[in-house]
Amino acid sequence: MTGNSLGVAVIGYGWMGRLHAQAYLRLRHHYPHLPAARLIGVADPEPDRRAEAVRRFGFERSVADWRELLDEPAVAAVSVTAPNHWHREIATAAAAAGRHVWVEKPVGLTAADALAVARAVRDAGVQSCVGFNYRNAPAIQQARELIAGGSLGTVTHARFRLFSDYAGHPQGALSWRFERAQGGTGVLGDLASHGVDLVRYLVGDVDEVIADTAVFIRRRPRPAGVGSHYAIAEGDQTGDVENEDYVCSMLRTATGARVVLEASRVAVGDQNNYGLEIHATKGLVRWDFRRMGELEVCAGDGYASQPVTTVFVGPGHGDYAAFQPGAGLAMSYDDLKVIEAAALFASIADGKPHGATVEDAAASARVLEAMTQSARTGRWTPVGSFPAGSPEG
Image (cartoon, rainbow, N blue to C red; front, side, top):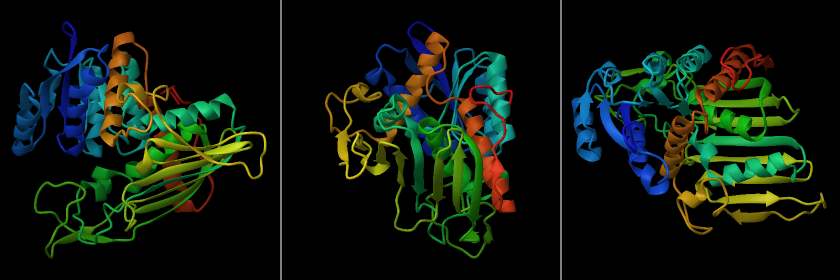
């Protein structure tokens, strides 16, 4: 940290790398009490992407080898927005070099990867943040308060859905996301990881799961070059899809609640259809990401025939006031990434974790690992004894 600024580097400049860079620059607009971000460097193997990052966001340096940025004294924090198979190596090296880390989910390919990053962060005494952005929505933060405060009673059962069509086209390019060695567990790591984090954040830790998975589009055309996971490819060269398109799982939480979690990346007709419905003994909360500023709430003592009210979140709900002055004014997905950046900077400023951390990622990864095992065996599978907040499990 120099003066009232904090030097940062972004490793991996795809869509998410751009969002991190943008979030850093917007910090002082919404959180003026925090240090400003100074974009020291960007690392990406593609020269065109590096050039765009410098041109668009004003990075002071651009390099092909991310290790060069860890040798830069001005870099205090590092964003890890490279493909999943790079998360562990980059994040552990950054922590060992004394850099605070903001890592996109799922933090590696396996629970072992996420745990290794959590241990590296703990051993180095640095702060961390993980890209579980949906928990940052003010409506979700308000739902958490309602549930924790007891006004809805005890949570009994819930449903979480994450449906997307980004891979629904049969000509969708066979990017790294579809290869197990680079993308890991497919839709589990990509979308279901968000669902597991929301379950843990709102309902509680997961004890055991039973799951079913499927691959519906088994072969895809190979891409001609670097592209996004929305890219369409043409040609006769195809390859196997190695990881999951779909998962449906039942979860039992430590509090006894029952949860259904379903995720799909090939849900034609559903564009980012993410949401949840949580039932409790005295009421419910419902949320749809595409109506991010609304929370449906039922609470009272009537039990049967109680009305459901739509609450428009506003100042006083989560971080809403940092963006808008009155209820009903829309926030965006990009705003949720600014909240993440603010959580990292606040953690660095006071030495205490804020928001989702790599320990949350490790706990979530254990649940995903249990889902993968259950899909193979067809049996209920215990998550294990990894305690939230302790990377020693």
